[in-house]
View 1 (tube, rainbow, N blue to C red):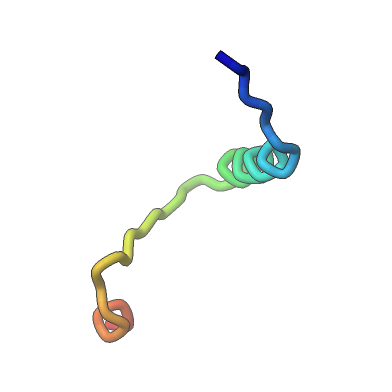
View 2 (view 1 turned 90 degrees about the vertical axis):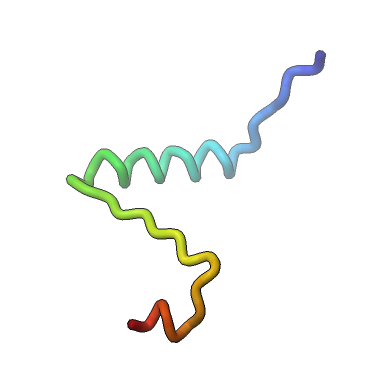
Length: 42
């Protein structure tokens, strides 16, 4: 099986995310799928 190569922009994106996670004390993830604009605006 051929080994996958990781593209440089992906390495940089993961490094930026990791840095952001390390600097912040808390994170909030939200999933807005299935909601209308009116529901999100409430």
